[in-house]
Every structure is written in structure tokens, then in C-alpha cells.
Length: 201
Image 1 (cartoon, rainbow, N blue to C red):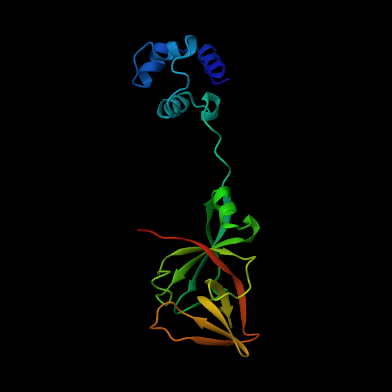
Image 2 (cartoon, rainbow, N blue to C red):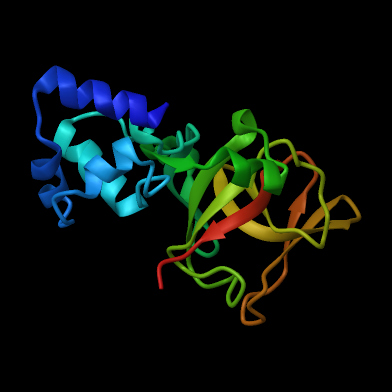
């Protein structure tokens, strides 16, 4: 199919195969052999990409694989604080984050339940660092001390481990310099569990 598509493009535009071969940095007979003799059987990825760009066509016409659509995940421009905290009225959306659908499936996160939040502060170090972006699974809102959660406590967004306690929960930091904090029942809302983190090295 890709050979037929390429042949049609060449014919319709009155192009010379030798000229196109030189565009690819190949010998003048390269594309003629590709079309007439089937050698090479497929264009090299670099050649295909350069040829598609030169011709102004989608690379799939020349045998390239169609890339999966990315899942757009809302990105909250609020430092879901692992320290000082942010406030609900400050929440605003930044440019969304695009995830490969296969990665979300692997993580077990539904696209509709995914959000990105930026971590601020050092209370969750070394696990999470200031500036890390974390993917939140909003379907997972049941406290589990093995996980890390984003929750709103009296308007403040925090990233903590959550441990059941009499009359509420304890918010636990991974950084031992930060004391355990108690949140009484009714004063907090679990927003989701951290499923993935992105970090600039």
C-alpha cells in the first residue's frame, strides 16, 4: 500500500525519483529500486520521515505507524503543598499534560479520573521533591497508609500519607523533620491517590 501511495504522489506531482533520492542523501537509484524491485522492502524510519516532510504528507501514507491519540490530563496550577500549602481559591488550570493511553492503562487510571498537580515543599522528601508533578487518580479516595494522597484540609491542599486515627486521620510526612499532623473527621477531603510522578533531572 505504501509503495502505491508513494507512486501516486510521484506521478501526480511530476517528481523525479533520482531527485527525491538525493533529498534523502541516497544514491540516485535508491527510490527507483524501492518502487520497482521492492528493495528495500520498507523505507528506513529516517528516510520515511524526511520524505513525508518534503512531500508535506502524513507519514502513515508512506508506511509509518499511526501514533495513538494522547490523553489530555488537566493540570492544576496549584502547588498541592507538601509543605506550606495552597488554597482552593487560588486554583487555576495550566496547559494540560498529555499522557499516552497505554501508560494510563498500565497505571490503572481512567482518563476521566486523572489530574496533574505540582508538589511544593520538602515534607515528602525523599519520595517527592519540590517541583515534582504527580498524577492523581481521583477514583482512589480510600485512605491507605501505603499510598500517598492529595487531600484538602480546611481549604489547604496537601500531599501526605494518610493513617486512620480516632476521630479523624493522621497526615504523615516522609521527611522526619515534619511532625505528624492530625485532621479531624469532616475537616478534610481525600481528592485522590498519587499514581505516577514526573521529575526534571
